Length: 249
Image 1 (cartoon, rainbow, N blue to C red):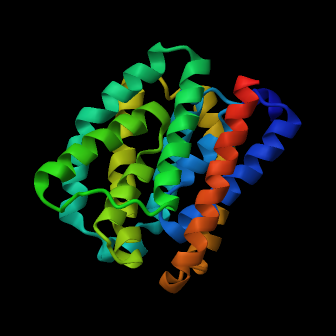
Image 2 (tube, rainbow, N blue to C red):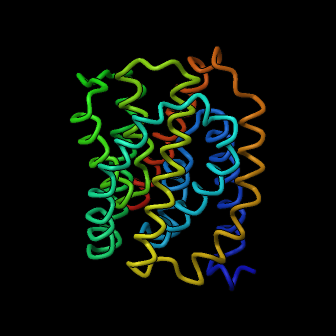
């Protein structure tokens, strides 16, 4: 198994735990699966190899959560954001597939830390629900998705700025990530990123991730959001900073 996945036994064990924890957060909060996976595993698996795995994990988790989140989602906002992402994703993927893997790792981890800190500080950007800022946010989210598979953090910041109720924010994120994941998957096919190795790793990572999603969904209570979100974001920042230190030192 380890030979098929091109990972050592210790790396595989850590990866399985990481995707399970990321799945729990995804099931509860509706986002951050890719961000946590990227923060935890970018030092083990190069981002260019990890990004398609994250996309497939996001699709699997979104399909599982869609039934419970679709009715609460702002569908108009989701469509506008993903229209912008159609422009952003290919440019982000192009950059990821052309720059040095070590540089892409540093960029991905720095983006995670920055976006998570903005959320932890509850920074509310001067945004509205009108089509233009929503479309521009979608472009940036798509670019970050192509670059580091963490566009969900950008959307979470956007919905935070709009002060959406936790239930509606979670539902909107689920719909956006499902639509965006499907479109990103198609782009990744065109870029040749969906390799046999990526599919094998996805097959190994999906079961513990989905178990985590089911556990997180069972504990989703909007009234707990003010306690749970800071913990998840702090964990995310810690993992990303640790990954940066391992890369730079």
